[in-house]
Image (cartoon, rainbow, N blue to C red; front, side):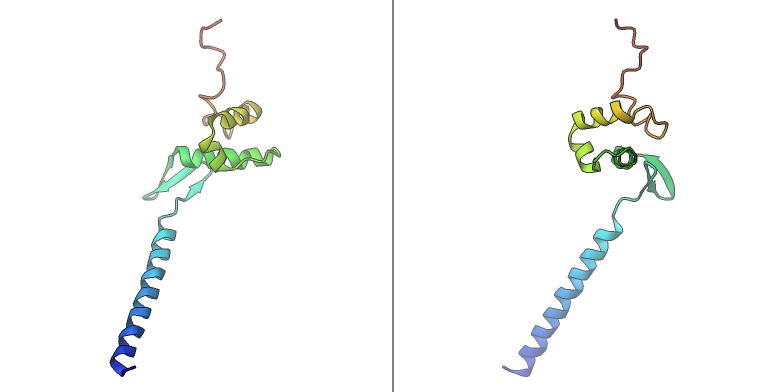
Length: 108
């Protein structure tokens, strides 16, 4: 093997490793930051369904329920079940508002 081919292969290997590291770093930088049901967007905190579901799972775990945020997001009936169980908790009342009967709907 010639010296030129070795340098070229070494360059390509280094380039591919560098690009892979950049891709991993970019993916980690774009991760959604949630705190108490709110997502950080440009320094502000916004209530998003993604973070609300994550917070609902967190609160449910304090009550001893095995709930993941992904399961809550992907299964509306599971979310209803959790809201029926812990919907009275002030931390998740706004998240469970649509899932729980309000008692003032006017229907009999």
